[in-house]
Amino acid sequence: MSKGPWDRWEGPIRGLRLPQSTWDALQREGITTIDQLKAVADRVHWLPGIGRKTAQLIKEELARVAPPSAERHDPDA
Image (tube, rainbow, N blue to C red; front, side, top):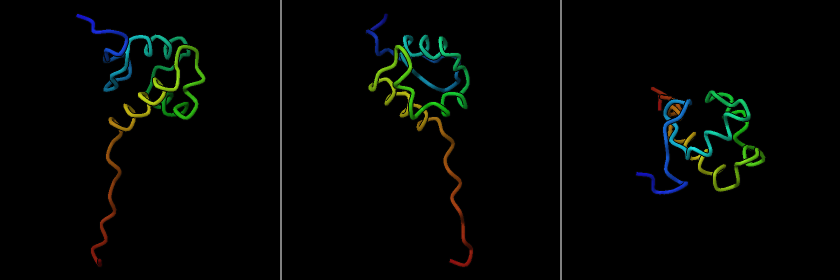
């Protein structure tokens, strides 16, 4: 049962959970990979159908699925 427009769904970019309307907007723009989405993340709110709240959600999802940055280990420290 749908709760509304902010229900999140796994879409074509594995691991990201976004509203269906967001997936539709990304697909219309030809954004189908995480690398493509990362490339436009800073200006994704300019895309038709994606406002500032959705853009923030996209950035949060990208951060959530990003691999942890490799911490440098200094054996002399």
